[in-house]
Amino acid sequence: MEEFDNPEKHITSVAKFLEIKHKLLNTSDINSGKWMFRGVKRYEYGLIPSIGRLTQKQNKIFKSKQKLFEFEKSAFAEFCINVYNDLRENNQFNLLAVAQHHGLKTRLLDWTLFPLVALFFAVEDKDCFEQDAALYAFQTQFVFNDFKKLTTPFHEDLDEYHFLFAPDLTQRIKAQQGVFQLFKDPTKEFTEGYNLMKFRIPSKNKIEIKRDLNDLGISYKTVYPDFDGLCWTINYNKLCIDQAK
Image 1 (cartoon, rainbow, N blue to C red):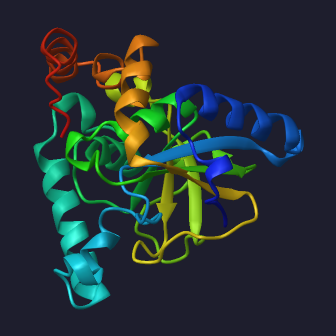
Image 2 (image 1 turned 30 degrees about the horizontal axis):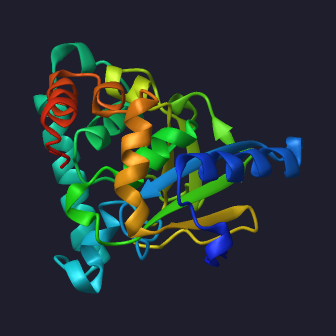
């Protein structure tokens, strides 16, 4: 992974980010695949799915991988039992994608094809405005269109990582133009590849970036196209009240 941590490469504005994105797209090999983006609210956050973070030192709940995986399968099974009837006919990957987008701890990691959405995720949380954020960019040729090509997300014969286009099962998933990274070992951080890049977003620039994104139509209402997103946007615009999670 290449870290661009000198001030000249910092993302200090939406315009600066678009300049960086333009250079990425125009200097990379067009045959090397799609660029994907992921924004994180703290610079020190690595690329590890939510279920794997439960074994990290600062948030250690499970002492062994076996216990972690038992919890993971149990939680997912309970989700499948309780989902709406119109989702029950979907395969395991589709259901796992919906569960991921609604907060269940899974072995999926969210990326997006829409760079401004990734930038929004990096700066949206009001409780982290005093910490630097990060934006990851990654290029890969290997993105599957169909989750059905893999039989189960928990199979031991999976490759280390799979990238899959998110199914348009909900308006939220559709709006975020998501790509999911499926981890064989969700406790192992993804750091591989010369085509994985990390950019710093200084804390002092986060509020202005968020305002500029809102002016461009990248807001809670468009990223979370439901009643929650609408109400967050109204409060943000009318009262300057930031109610990000």
